[in-house]
Length: 71
Image (cartoon, rainbow, N blue to C red; front, top):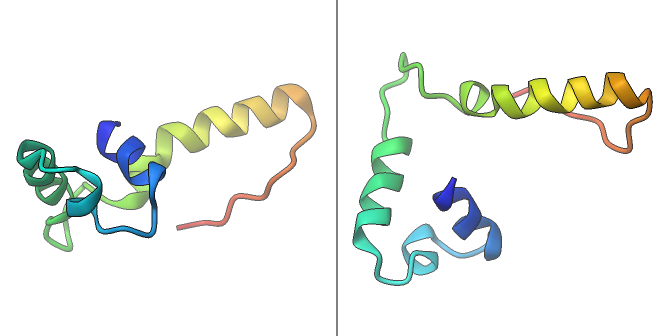
């Protein structure tokens, strides 16, 4: 979550610049994204809880202001 929050503050900058010399954060970020192709760590799996909660919110409100594209 902290990595996503940092990247969200300035999405056009490289994570190494956004981390502001927090090398533990940089190491953790690269450990997360440097996974083999058959890994369970995928954008879809990472976003699955968010998508499920968003879908539930849309169903309860019967209204949605955005459309979610599949990954």
